[in-house]
Picture (cartoon, each protein chain N blue to C red):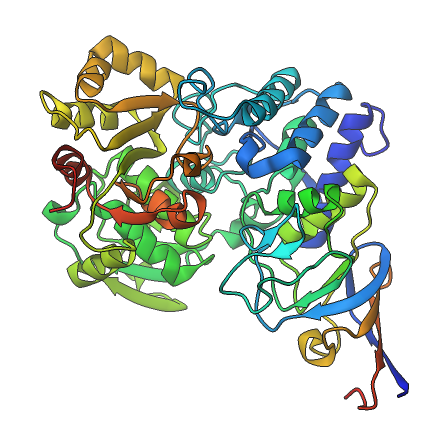
Amino acid sequence: MRETKLALKGCGVVKGIAEGAALVSEQNLSLWGGLNPQTGVIVDKRHELYGQQVRGRVLVFPYGKGSTTGAIVLLEAVRCESAPAAIINVRTEPILASGALMARIFYKKEIPVVDRLEKNPVKVIHTNDYVRVNGNEGLVEIARKRADKIN
Amino acid sequence: MLAGEHGEAAQIAMEILTRVGDIYGAEEMIEIASAHTVMTPYRDIMDAGVEICEKFAELGAKYSVPTTLDPAGMDLQRWRELKIPETYAEKQMRIVHAQERLGGIPVWTCTPYLYGSVPMSGQHLGWSESSAVVFANSVIGARTNRLTAVVDMAAGIAGRVPKFGLHLDENRQGKVLVKINVKSKNLTDANYPIIGYFIGKLVDDKIPVLTGIPHTVSTDQLKNMGAAMAASGSVALYHIASVTPEAKNIDETCLKGEWEDTVELGMRELKQTKEEMCTVRAREVDFVTAGCPHYSIMEIKKLAALLKGKKIHKRIKFWIYTTKHVEMLAKRAGYSSVIQAAGAQILTETCMLVSPTDIYGFETLMTDSGKCAYYAPTLCKTEVVYGSIEDCVETAIRGHMQ
């Protein structure tokens, strides 16, 4: 088995640097009603990530779905140490981004958010790839310990 | 202010607003006339919300513009009687005290535009609460984006918001034309939330322009239509041709312009949408509820007339949610005693969606609110039946649906 690497350039929406194993979905995700912030488990039964743990993962999905109390769900997850390490979207929904940027302000926790990558992240990144997210520079580095090559 | 000369709280508020502005591509800040915050129900904002409210209060933050408060997570006076757990109530009261220290206006309502903080046309605001945002933008012609929790407190503290979205003229134009082909005698109170629900699902966050609504439409009808639209979609602004302030001069020629989509809404669509708003067909109902958004004094008056001399089935709870102002007026006008004599209860400063109604184990909820019908399956964990207030009352008396 060899390690393949790929770096993708995008936009840093929320600053910070973090890394972890990717958790990828092709479906849009609403944290409000979708994530149990105390446990870090996806609780939306209609979602393909239902039952998955997001704690410490690099969460990759196309778009967020906003709601007026959406930002607080991410903050509560941070308070309970159940938050994802970083978030990568095709395009980040601003309420989700507000939650991530306030995590640093209130809980000194950086959750970098990167979007608009040169390739579609939900296609290029696979669940359990090891991903490093640099929100300061809008850079995503992907390492895959598998024989198949990254397209 | 960002440099911190107004203290740490103001610095935090400005940092939040500046970074939110960066995300949306705002070039500058704009002063606001008022703010409205949803950092109020413990059920929604959880322990992180308690901590953030208290953090701002401990730093000595004060709202620098009138900042009204959304409903709390329980009836603040009658919570013991309603069997709200002590641990929950204790957290809720910490939020209440922190918001009081910040100088929040304790209206505890989603209808601050009726009681507490009435904006003027053209004013910039920093509001959250989707039903209030859509009312302020559409019916009044004020200008606010749909702020999210915490950012709304930052707006109240800093007295400004990043200038983007609905603060700018170019983003307030209608995109989708919705022709309402319903005879005015069929434009009943109960049909407005259905119209709102239909349009929200159709346009999501695009701005609809409605035709076929008469200028005699009531404030409550628009309140209830907008709330449903902002729930089933993310609508923050709609226009009604020849009725709402920014569509006063829309005439036949304007309506022939370029639209992303043109849709007709008739009796058939109303019937289909009403069915969609119900998760069950004829079944026993155990919770009948109204006041989402908070009931106005006119709605209470209508309900009292329907309940006069009637008795609600003993198996059914009938709870109506409103503000302290309306409760006081309802007592004075004698509506409260009529409603109580029938076995219904008026609860204040909270609602069925933000208080822990799931603790009662209700199975089927019936409501005259389009917004409540949309959220109840998730938030109240019940089946839902949507109906007119007349049907709600009839069901509550009979004990089951016809």
